[in-house]
Length: 329
Image 1: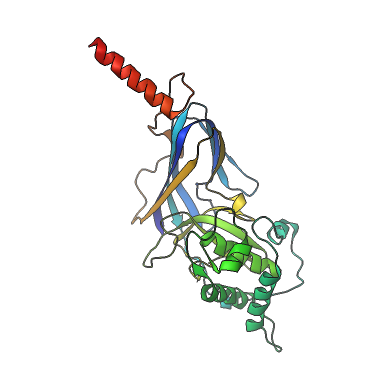
Image 2 (image 1 turned 90 degrees about the vertical axis):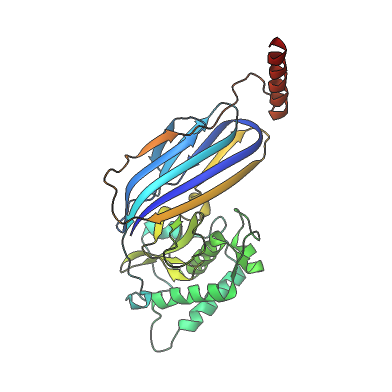
């Protein structure tokens, strides 16, 4: 599948701020089943952008804006080619091993940390899922166990915005039985780790294709679990499905704290509001001319005066200057 993706982020402040420093994780990863053919990122107010990789191989674009400003706009545009994946988990030969020893590179994806909290209720849910697929006469197939997790989450938890927040631990979705893709992802990672299955958090985009899947208008999150025979396999607990070619992976991590699309700090007392919009389009062919990977500038103004007193004083100064100009005329 060939996809064109546009990810727009607008950050608004109710007063002027300065010294904004921000990291972005918006560039799709280069992987076996996914090729990033083109990527551009435009930012306003004007600034220089540096790019580098984090410890998990995610691409980071970093910038700072020292001038006084009350808005930041970021537009990331990608063209990505994805391939179909094997989605019949029940056909994988892997067997669940409760005492399996994994390579040290997987240890981070077995630990409880951050929002993924180990609780008695989580363990109870994990044991219940395991009992559904267990048999005295045969080992538990890992694919069947993962599918049972998806089914349980779909039946017992409801997708609803406004119940949890960006930093909510899984104790909140366990209590309310409601949440969004971030909560569903943290929950399934917790269930997997409780059963000694390496699991990691994935952030990215989802193209609705023929289905109106939850999460297609904003950034999305899902889970990857480690199958020894094949490697990492993606599943989406929010939509109760195995990840297909309409999923575009941007970043991987232990939990959401490793992969936020934007993360930063600024100097000032202003409150921040963020608006995010994601659109995707399936292309019939690769464009004849692909834009080189670049960082550009958006026309977002800064406050160039010497007054540091905030918006109200700035408006008063502007009004006074306009009155003086009118009197001179």
